[in-house]
Amino acid sequence: MIMQIFRFAGVGVSALIVHWCVVLILVPLGLAPLWANVVGFLVAFNVSYFGHRHFTFQAAGVSHRQTFVRFAGVAVASFLVNEAMYAALLTFTSLSYDIALLIVLGVVAVMTFVLSRLWAFAS
Image (cartoon, rainbow, N blue to C red; front, side, top):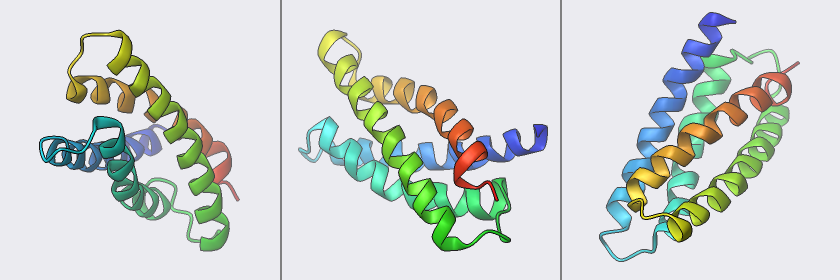
């Protein structure tokens, strides 16, 4: 389990960096932070899904169809929490959009790990 947490962290940090960088590119181009967050999520989803399927949870024995549908459910649920927390931080604090997003991505990562381990990639 300890190695799985380290692998999850590696994949998660990679997806976080992709997500964050997409937002950092799009906001200065004029896209609102909450919309940039949606695009960042969609791009980072691929990094996260394939990394977790093949590296973190090594779910080769579980069908791609099953894991993709389950992980997509986990990801969408996590993203809804992400977007709500991000909107709240942008509205009710003086945090900059990039720092607020880092906080949100870190908090939501824990929820994603638990749901992925116990359900999305479980056989």
